[in-house]
Length: 133
Image 1 (cartoon, helix red, strand yellow):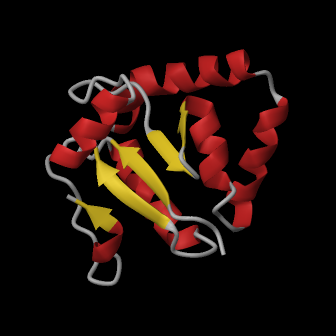
Image 2 (image 1 turned 120 degrees about the vertical axis):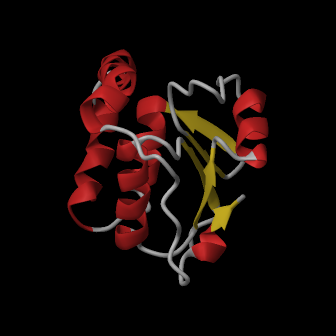
């Protein structure tokens, strides 16, 4: 069984919200806990890892006491997924500076390209326990 992992995400970003929903539908096992950066716990985690909680430029993925950001975090999440998303793990063969450059372009434009939500989407009753407030 995989170890428990934490995904810190921007709950007002439509891309981030859709990504969380995708993860929930395609996880191999329910091992990821989700924390919105806008929550008290999320703000604390963001500050601990030097991310501005009011203007996050990445999401964090914590696993096995290791913190991952940007493209490294995306690749780590993909290892928890089944289906088409598993191909993302092969991105590790692309040089990190190139992966992070692409990640930064999407992150800088994510609200403009994908929009934002006026309120955080509520988890379903069967996934509510996976979210920390």
